[in-house]
Every structure is written in structure tokens, then in C-alpha cells.
Length: 400
Ligand SMILES: [Zn+2]
Image (tube, rainbow, N blue to C red; front, side, top):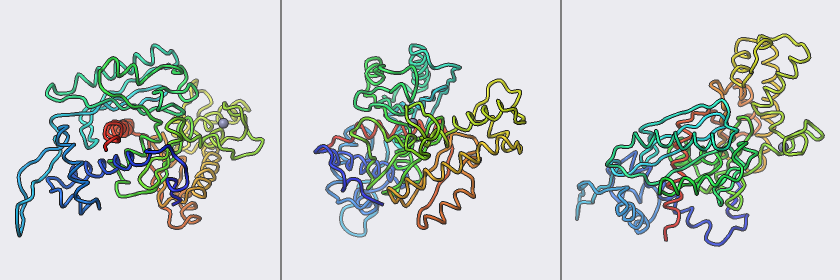
């Protein structure tokens, strides 16, 4: 894969803290899976030098994230001290924010969800209602935190574009949230550090820190919902554009002079391949009088169309078939640009293969040999765990 960190000019000091964060993530993840484990075995397993492992683990012990727990065996010399996660002391509040729902999970240091709350709203477009709802969801989640545990921080994953630097969501991603200082409000109310990032990034982080990409340095993560997002993990580093506006993959042109897009341009990928595009095509076909089991349904959402497609409804199947074709082209473009070994495709449907069909994946795999594809669907709790990694990244990314 093309290593962006070697090609792009970044602000000085940008890479090193992130690299340390990845080291911390690898250490925490390994301790969680293999612990109790000695510092020496940690260094060997992760490929870090022993001095770096000692420095990081000593800081984690001082913070109460990791603790020493007895001694291991040694054929010669001193018995090594074993380390394990101190799961009883801290937790993280992780929020996954969507247009119509919010999920708030409580996780331990390894991203394991210990409690979660989900709330749905018919309309999140009223600014005060939407933020109040998130606030309420966090309060409900905090009520489930055992009193002996302290909250390390709050992580929020939300549809992009947004500004990590300002801690705000742009209206294009989540109407009604423009200019709300989400991070600052959360920090002021809960008195813990808060972090916010694009959901494609939090999902990619979840795979890197806690999921199927723990041992992968380079991969891309495509998210298909009402819009289309892309996250790039390159050399264990998540590529963020100046720490601010995420990559606008959904607004790359796939059809010159094509359909009008909300961004003001034409032919954007998400006007053809997103779930909103599928719904739009269904409405257009119904207005032309084409028959469908969806014809008498007042409100049609992407899941309704997916269910109709699974039931053999031609109109629904055609709408998905078109989206599948364009999505495959879009993913092909991303592969041509970044040459990843691994591609995650996350479709916000209970049955993601209605859009990203086995045949489409097979065709991509054939065209891009050596690239593996993992199809997944939106799991709000899993997404929230990704937001937890934001907190770990934010807290432990600035170690010297
Ligand atoms: Zn656009």
C-alpha cells in the first residue's frame, strides 16, 4: 500500500504521537488477549524495544489502566513481573451518533462493551433536541457505571464532515448540528476529556485497536449509509486531513454531468451508490408508476428497500443493482489510489450483502488480486467501541 506518511507533508510532531498511540493500542490489546504477560514477552510479541515497552507500561500503571499481578516463570534469573489490564478502575463512555439515533456504550480499556443505551428520535433536526438527546443517553449510560470506576473520557463518532480540531459537526453530515461546540459542551458538563471524529475513522480505529485489523498496518474502510465515507489506515496511522475535514469520498465524481448532489456538484458517488440514492431511485421509479410492493408504503427507508429486494421485488432489486455497480467502481477507484491489502466495506443494513453482493466482491477480488475484502454491517454498539479508541488515542497520543 502507498504509505501516505512518507508522501505527505504534515505538521512537525504529527506522526510520532500517533505512532505512540498505536503502540499503546497494540500493548493494551495484547495484554487484554494474552495477559497476564511480562514486559519482555510484550516487547517480543509486538516488536517494540523493551525500553519503549517499559516506558509505556509504567505510564499505564501510573494511570491505573494496567496493573502488575504476580510473577511469571523464568528458567534463569529473576522471575518477570506479569501485567494485566486493570479493568476495575476505569471505563470509557463511547457515543455513536447518527441522524436518527444515538448509542452510548460504556467500555473497558480493551473496548469491551460492558453496558449500552440506544435512543431513537423521529427527528434529530432540532438542534437543542438532538444535543439534549445525546446528553440524556450519556447520563443513562453513566448511571450504569459502577461507582468504583472513574470515566477516562468521552468519545463521539458522528457522520462527517466534521472538525476534530474544533470539536464540531458540519451541518452537511448531520443537519441541525452546525456550530454546536459538541466537544466543549461535553467537557464542560462531565468534566472529562471529550473527543469527536468522523465515524468512518472510528470504525477503522475499532478494527485496528480491537477488531479484525489488529495485525494490519494498511487498510481502507468504506462506510455506506445515507452518505459514503472512507477512512485510510496507512502504516498504522489514520490519515486525517489536517486534523479537520475528513476525506470526501462520497463526493468524488463517478459520472460526469450526472445527478445533482447536495454539495453543489454533479455525478458524486453518493448520488448513485449510497442508501439514500437507493431510496431516491425507488421513489423515482414509483412516481413513474412502476409496480412494487413498496408502492403503498408512506415512508420508505433503506431497510424497507432491502427487505423488498430480498423478497424478489424487481424495482427494489434494480435500485440496489445500480448502486452495487457504482459502489464497486468507487471502491475500485480507492483501491487504485491506495493499493490496500485489505478493504472493509461497512453497509448500514441488516443484510449488507444486498448492496455489496458476493458477486460484486468476487469481481473486485478477481480484478485486484492480493486485496482481501471484509463485508460488515453497522453495529451501533461496535461503532461506539470505535469511539472508545478515540479516547485512548486522545489521552495517550501525546506521550513523550
Ligand atoms: Zn457531492
